[in-house]
Amino acid sequence: MTTQYVQDVKHAPGGALDTEYRRVDGATHTDGVDATGAAIRPTWYGRLWDTWDLPPAERRLLFKVDGLILTFASLGYFIKNLDQQNVTNAWLSGMDVDLDMLSNQLVTATSIWTVGYVIGQIPSNLLITRASPRWVIPSLELVWGIATLGSYAVKSYRSLYALRFLVGLAESGFYPGIHYLLGGWYTPREIGKRAMIFWLAGSVGSMFSGFLVAYTHLNDVHGLAGWRWLFIIDAIITIPIALFGYVFLPGLPLQNKKPWWLNEDEYALAGKRMSRIGRGGKTEWTWAKVRRLLGSWHTYFLPLLYVIWNNGYVQNPMSYYLKSFNATPAPVPGRSYTVAQINNLPLVTTAVLIVVGLLQAWLSDGVFRGRRWPFIYIGAVITIAIAIPLRVISLYGSIKAHFALYWLCTMGNAAGPLILTWINEICSSDTEKRALLVAGGNDLAYVVQAIAPNFVWKTTEFPAARKGFTWVLVLQSLLIVWTSAILLLLRRDERRALNSPSEDEALAGTRTPSDADEKDVAHVGGV
Image 1 (cartoon, rainbow, N blue to C red):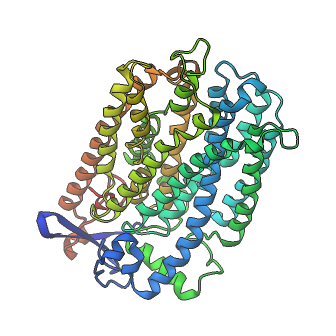
Image 2 (tube, one colour; image 1 turned 60 degrees about the horizontal axis):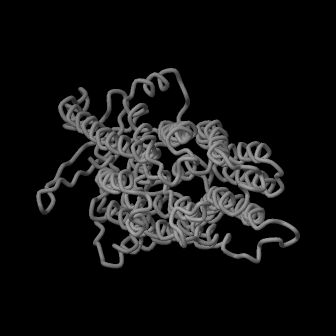
Image 3 (cartoon, one colour; image 1 turned 180 degrees about the vertical axis):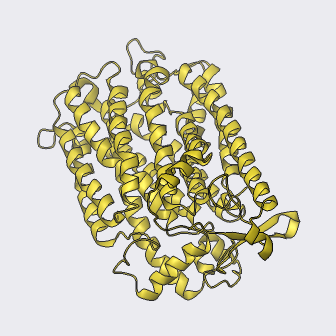
């Protein structure tokens, strides 16, 4: 049965619209009420962390959920990105010579990892709509650790290719699975921050990899090159994370068993919070459901939004730029960089991304009242403004300018977790659709990523990468157009819903927001 809503539109201060959706069973969704329906009075400390403005019972619930879900998710994504960055840093720190990876093998290894990642992603996310994430995600984490450990012993790049495929396959369920899980526990005034913290934990992992490589005492310990120790460290960290997940990771409050660390009242409160915002529990797969899914514009437009974003940001070439000064003959005589400098100087770029990402998430959940799309536009404009000079200025004629642009090139990259959050919210009432489109967006993004870098981000063309920067300009322009199209479709659906009540709703004076096929709430998408 599809959830139905009444839409109440109120004029907020400054002329903005404050829209509330009241379900026909009496539940409501606003960005200004708690789970009991009482108005939330914002405080300055609640602006810093939203749970402080909630009643004690809801605050205790979120304290537990944040402490366990965010801990597992952030640690897991930290180690995933540590591993991905370790492959690049290992190549920059001697693996290229040891494994004879002197041509385009690094990009090929990344593409092969992506193939494994693509194959497993949608099946694993659909699996956790039926089996509890508590068992699925930690099991994949454990397999991932074992496959990563094997990377330390490879003797050729062909062996590395095989292991990177297995690592990608085991990793496939983690990122989309966690986003789906976040969508099952948090409301629009909370989820943007949590999604961003989870995603940025990966950036911290990328930074940490540089520091690991910088430690020269790892080299020749037990006769192993320093880059081989990077993969051993990845595996050692992963196994405790997997065990933590088996014990503490919960299912979803509307469709799985109560986790042991919540009491009955807390679990009921978690379910009530999700019912108030229109989140749906699992339903049976039927041909009618499949037809609705295939006939919905959501299925085609929403995943492609993430695909465009994921492939449209700058692949920062700073490490390659620094390493190019060590070539023979030297492009700039007398200027060279150590391995530590090559790995650590680009970390400023990641620090900038972390600051900008946190700022955008807090603004999206708070001042922007759950609207995600403004930050897609902002990021696209910033990225275009940075990609143009990187595309045209002389590579060695303005070294300081290149340093500044490289350090700032991630300022426009932070919209990704907010896009997946937006998909979670637009598809709120159908849990299978939500799982499929979150995974589908990430999956298709990596399909393109498995192919495009071999043509536009070739290792042999770094650090200039002029094809790559042209690719960025094209996709960022498309991102602006695609986001605008989605907003127009959401507004169209909202107008249709207001103008086309059903017979029962007409008698009751209610109207139901929907797209052409399903009663998803358009305004929850933050139009």
